[in-house]
Image (cartoon, rainbow, N blue to C red; front, side):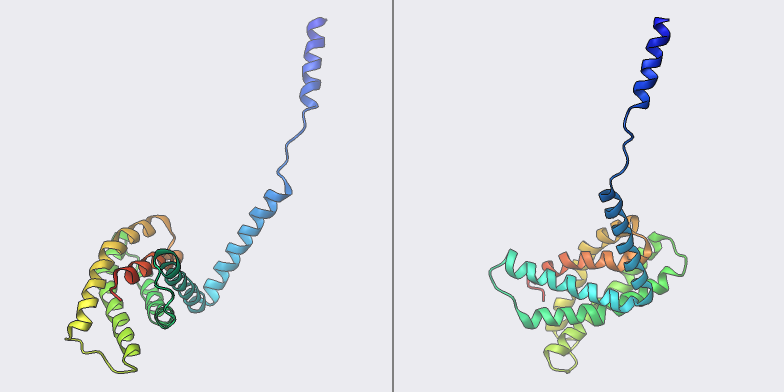
Length: 202
């Protein structure tokens, strides 16, 4: 009888234990995160250029601000900040959208895509960037492509791109889905912008 009573007490104690339910705060925060991400993806599909251009411009400005106020005492160069933001939004972003859209739809492996990116895309995008940069500085005049003032910085940027962007690209391809490549590149561009300005290449 005593054994039966003990078992009955154990069952009663187990039934009386409170059930732990997830808090509304956890549900709300998770739901909000999902809603924000879903909204971002929806905007990315509906307005790919606008979303990518805006985020590229914002991150580029953050890179310039970080260099100006955190890493140096030079202060902010408003002309260069606006110029590099413009180049990021209206030169690099459309080229990146076309490139990743075309190459991503060809069914190549990630290794082949990355190889093509650095053999074909990197030299072209840097050449276009330097051409546009020089034309802005010279108020519309085309650069002298054989001048050391043009190809010197161009070669430095291309070589620096390989040192920085190849490892970054490999990490991006292994961690991000293809539709997030440009956003991931924007994050990389934050550090790349700081490197370019800090080393005096631009």
